[in-house]
Image (cartoon, rainbow, N blue to C red):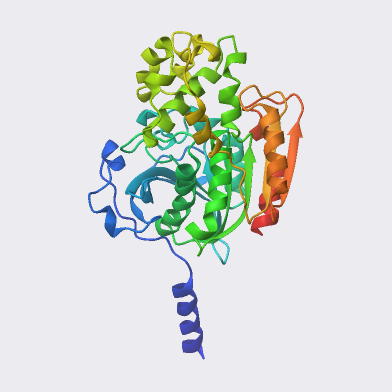
Amino acid sequence: MARIALLFVVALVAAAPAAAEVPKAPSGLKLYKPPKNLKTYEHGDLIWARRAENPLPQASRTWTLLYRSTSLRGKAIGVSGFVMLPKGKPPKQGWPVVSWAHGSTGIADSCAPSRDPGGPYTAYAAPQFGAWLGAGYAIANTDYEGLGTPGVHPYLVGRSEGRGVVDIVRASRQLDGRLARRYVIAGHSQGGHAALFAAALAPKRAPELRLRGVAAFAPASHLDLLSRALPTFTSPSGLSSLAALVLRGVSSVYPQIDPSQIASDRALALLPRVDKVCLGELGEPTAFGGIAPADLVRPGADLEPLNRLLARQNPNLRIAAPILIAQGMSDTTILPFTTNQLDGELRARRGNQVTYLTYPGVEHVGIVGAADRPARRFFRARLK
């Protein structure tokens, strides 16, 4: 009888999920340079990883990783990111995952959040990260294509962002076998845009996973409408930095877009800085922050080819999982009228389940904290 009991215990231990054996990453910034044999990997395969310092006390372990994804041209590429694991014992089916799509940081490699997981581009969401970890969720944060890794980051090109957001969930489960198949996607600003594209791609991109919902905080949308409205913004604004990122990102993957034919002489002279510094420096008065959006465009420039491409990046998509959108009504970065319009478009698509929350007096960064409790209730309901 004792022997049977012992065998039963051994069987239970053997069946329990365990941390995977992790391919060791090279030192320093070599982590971000993928190997040459990427064709031997499937999208979402873990290439390598290394331990990082925990930026939050609620995390038991933090990893910086490189995983295989796919560029817009169908080429196998490496994409970087970081993963934080919760403390304690995982539930029977493993820790659920929140795939976090980060907001705008810039295009330069130094702007990749995984270079500093506790840095300024994730610190504003630290209370939410801590709460999610405390609730027993793992967090996977992609850097997106070309941000930190070779190539130019296709800023606000939806399919590129979405692939990175979904593929890191696959890679995270190879990193640690105690992660569950079920997950939610969440993101802010650029990341809200990325989250919606990722949720639309997810069923075909990773059919073995179980997407339970998507939360988009102040998601970027209707970029073509904003492009057409540039002449109305006649004072220097942070929108100028974002417009420069859009032009650089879109032109990197659509060769028919020539910045020299679109940007004014002043904007064109500053454009090389986009590849060298992050959003904060781009927004300084000596850079794009000193230019009114109306002064970004070359007189007589034909913006219609660009606007048609931007219209294709609108996240008006059919999404099988429930959708939560939150928007601050004092937001001067993602203008509320664009999110109001996106809400109507998403609801008009058959099968979409949309909850739209608005917050008077809340600005762009504050929306993540303002909508924290409803978002956590949404996660609990979807991940239980």
